[in-house]
Structure formats: C-alpha cells, structure tokens
Amino acid sequence: MPGRIRSLNFSVDDYIQKGQLLMEIEAPELEFELSQVQHHLEELQYEQAATGIDAEARARSLISASELETQRQRLASLIAQISQLAITAQQSGVVKDIDPSMQVGTWVANATPLFSLMNSEIQDVYAYSGEAELGRLEVGQSGTFYPEGGGREPFEVQLTEIDYFGVTQLEQLYSASVFGGDVAVRETPAGELIPSRAIYRIHLNPVESTMEERVIRGTVKIAAFRRSLAGRAWRFLAATLIRESSF
Image 1 (cartoon, one colour):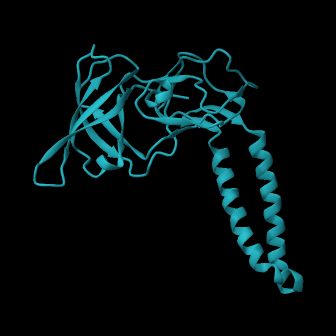
Image 2 (image 1 turned 30 degrees about the horizontal axis):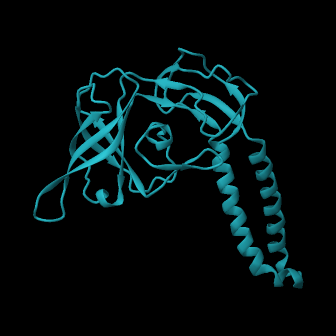
Image 3 (image 1 turned 90 degrees about the vertical axis):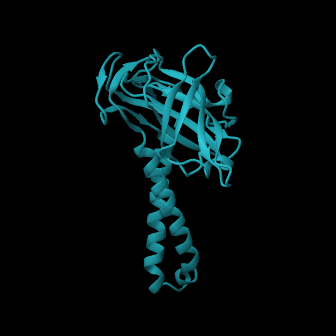
C-alpha cells in the first residue's frame, strides 16, 4: 500500500534471515482513519451503555448496535492493514536490485518494486488455473515446465499446493498481461492488478533444475484426471519460475 518509508534495515548484498524486519512504512491516511474509527467506536459504545437510562438512546439502540459492529469490523481491517506496514523477510537471502531512490522519508506507491531478496537454493513455480481445470488437479500430480521462448530445456515439476480461494489481486507481476505475461488483468487507479476472470494459484516444485535465472515465464503441462472413463487429459497452465522475493 502507498506510504512513506519510516526505517530501512538493510543494504545491497546484505544477507537477510527469514523473519527479519526489513523496513517500516508509515501511512498517515490510514493512521488518521484509524484514529477516527476508534473515536467513533468509543461514542457508539457510550451510547449503547446509556440505553438503560436514556429513552432517546434506547430508541436508537438497534441502529447503534448495527453501526457498532460495522465500526468494529472496520477497525479490525485497519489494524490488519497497518500491521502489514512492518515488512519482514519471507525467506532468507541476499538483498539485490535496490531502487536507488529508496531512502527514509521517501514516498512509495502501491505495488512499486523496491528491491529483491535472492535465494539460489529456492525455486518455486507458480501457475494459474481456471475454474474448469481446478477440479481435475490434485496435489502430487507431475508435470513439465516449458520455459518461454524455447531456448532452454524443459524440466519436471510436482504439484505441491492448490489455493482454492480465488486470486483477487495478482501478486506475481511477471504473470500479468500488462507485463507481458499470460494472465489477463485490469489495473486499478491504486495500481492493483485484478484478474479479468476467476483464477486459482497452483504451487509446484521443480524435481530437478539447474537454471540460474531469477525469473522465467513459461507453461506447465500437467496430466490432469478426467471425470469420465477416458482417463487423463493434458492441461496447460501459464506459469512462472521464481527464485526471489520482490518487495
């Protein structure tokens, strides 16, 4: 989310441990809204407490109860958003590709790439399935990753995880159509990439791969199960090999 950098705890080529605090961002608008919601919530709680002694307050009690719940949900949402402003490393690795303009006090827009955390031992493949293919995929199925362009050898992958909650915002920017990927998206004024149709993220691991590139787009071919007696059917999913975390 957009905000101003409050602290930076790393430099280029630093080795970062998983869970280490990388940076903190402050969002004055969020913090102001949090203050307003907290104040309004206190007023509603006072009104609710006064319903036993004030006739007019009793008449408004049903409305206040509904609004009280709405404000509680909004407060929880704001607290969750603010907690995300303290950015920690999701994996160990070496800091690379730092944006030279990034420094304490700098304002950053939503979804702006700031730096990468490179780990040569990690290779993840993320693919995206439509609703029609989802029911035919199962953890443990094998497939083949075909790198984009045809200049590299394909390699075997295994399906390790299926996210059955639809993707509401695309986080793997390399897969987005606006960046040359195969996943059709629309960009909101806030910079969020929203899939144009219902898609579900599939996580696969290479069985063996010696590729050194950080990011490779391609296609995963999976032998998915048919729902008829005909056996298996091949499914082709847009996929990306990733060896880094981008922030």
